[in-house]
Length: 372
Image 1 (tube, one colour):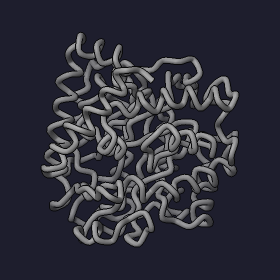
Image 2 (tube, rainbow, N blue to C red):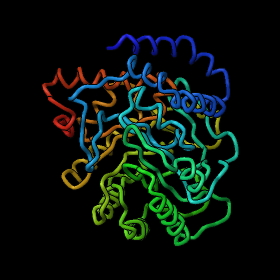
Image 3 (tube, rainbow, N blue to C red):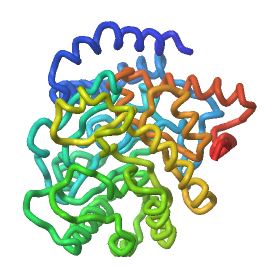
Image 4 (cartoon, rainbow, N blue to C red):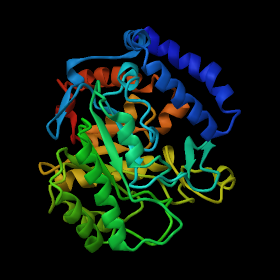
């Protein structure tokens, strides 16, 4: 493994993380994303970071949904919801990144607390509720932008305390996609986030008839980029399978498993840590087991028809590799950055190269689904 990766890991865990963890989670997030945006605008900084951290190996390159990924590790939706990090992420090892989730209208976020740490549980309490500046602001910021790696846009329903009908929610989502299509921003893919558990109202896209209505309206736009669906993890296997049956009826490139853990009694959650919060749901380790199970379920059902992307509980190369062998062609994470540091994508890629060689695989594609 590169010396720069090892050094960055040690420095983050021993020096910076203890300092950051003394402060409010959301304030630290805002500060660090701002730093990342600033550093990404400085070419010599990007070049130095790339030389120290980035791992480029032919075995990591992968073409998914017609998109060339130099490595399979991506930033999940929920972190870069103000479109600040697309310049710096490639230099620190990411193969792709998702902006968002973005909604038709801006939303300042749910009442605080919106973010909190469950350190022993290796989790975050998340209660942002699609906090974002709205699609117009994001597209204006990105106007004329070129990206150094595949960048996707995650789109969800506008969150509001005002009630919205099912039909209004569909039109709200469709309008966001329409505005993005008209903008000509060079996104590589879209994500349709149907699974955020921190929204107001009774709108749901989980029942097959509701999901069908949404996908019919969105795909009627004949989108210019592949569409992935961000899925829940709290549904049963039967419910998930029914949703996949609907998705397979539409021109959808893949599914992402998945979103936050809603079960406060999940064995990975230490009760005393969860008790600090009366709102929100859980990222990180509490999502890992169910995400793995659903990656396998989805791969068995949709293999050859669409792609599966693994998201949830990724803290190491071994975590990413397990999801790949269960059926994930690409991997996304957020929480691992908080606990392991900004070098994590690079460290995972270095580890994946070794794991692929150990098991006799020439590339990522050969390993996908081997344990499904």
